[in-house]
Length: 315
Image (tube, rainbow, N blue to C red):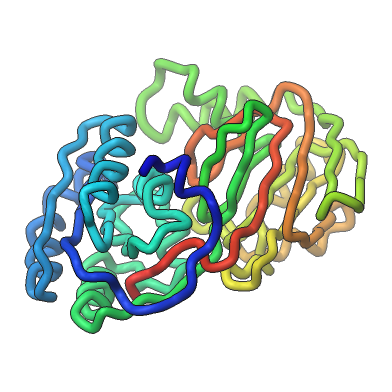
């Protein structure tokens, strides 16, 4: 069974199936924290009475394939040690399946794990996951399913960025210098200088259509992205809905002033910010590539659907 085959829909909540636990650890997560965490996490999972498989992967493509193969080979659960990007890779294998999932937050951005109810301390989260394994306990949570114009589908857990934030990511990914976070900071400065509203078409649940100029559009399954920015502050990953936040044709100075408010979620009170809620969101704009869970997914137009109970969490 491939990750694409598993994009069929949700599964009911229930007890954990018998079988081993596969572990995917990102070696670069949290600037190397994985190397210190891995032995302790493996010890906790082993104490839960399950066989533990440590997956070998050095690249995102290898990690995606390793997760898919583990599911095919009978893993009952998949645990990640890393950030949102690592969780995203695992979701492509377990989304819409009966395989349980547990994220140990050890990355630069851990929005999904925190929004899903795990402690932000990685070892405390590992204890929660191990206890759920020992008890055979899972809880379901929604995922967002994104379909591109070519029909390719992706699961995501946090927020689809489809405006200025996505453009910054595209810029940063094309840059070879500087290294580390400074590359992203420089990309922000470059794209702020080039800031202009884009023309969007937004269709909600196949009926309600909106056309507008905007500099930022976000489609959230969860409230936050980017390491705690509550861009969709009212989003609930258990309500079967997606939250859409639109910042209209604001100026550079206004965008800069609004940004600190995003961490508190109070930006939605700004008169040029609009919010919507729907089960299915169709979004179109020229020259925009959408990012979710920090990963590059697809060029717009895209269709995003909330899939209730698509993920079985070890919690």
